[in-house]
Length: 314
Image 1 (spheres, rainbow, N blue to C red):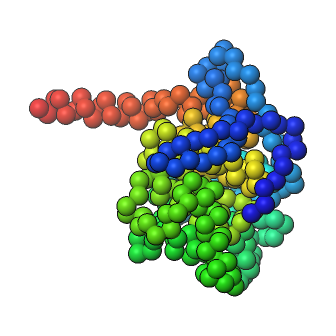
Image 2 (image 1 turned 90 degrees about the horizontal axis):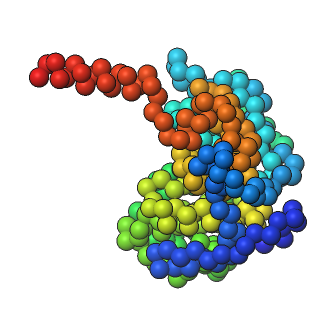
């Protein structure tokens, strides 16, 4: 994996993040904006990568499961070199969108492209080649309990390359150093903290040196310190190696920190799309409700009625 020079006029501060007894150097520190606290908080805007050409393109994509429509004619372009964060309530199709991009699901209507190739029309053989260019970090890490750390990270190399054992060992050591877990190849996942397991999963996601890494709730279940370490790793992979990222998350602190672009997926449609500062200042009530973590009034009323009924019965 070749380190790329940032030529977008940015000067991110080098930082060192430490957790689980290991140090990760070189992450580009981008503090989340004070605009999360309100439109008058007055944070200075930070630069965002405009991205290059289109790497992922969804054109009029719809997807339903039975009578439940999850995506409703969604069109979206993901620019090469950007970190795009997708937020939205549970069940609105965020993870489905990721699975469509990698070809694990097919759209009912519309077209899905990756690097110019139409994913939804590819043969199984062609899909294998595409998936080598896409790393996936699963929400619960999805490590193999029967394999140690080194074997987990090495698995894609065994399955998809003709590398020798020595070459695989060198690559595994390199990506584990990148995520701050050097020398832990023989440790078992069951002996590691949640943050360490997440970093092992990230090492596995990048071991084939993909163009795109997709993250499904990367900070779920982590305390704020370890969650921020994952944020820094996502930023470093983008700024130092030019990896394009798509991140699905409910973590607004993480979203605002790592994103070059944020969009809200709601009821099968994209209803807000912009850089973090613009997004967080949006006057759209659905956007503000999600940012501020406000419960839906209809659901609250249903709960209150249920509680009142319980008191009457007692």
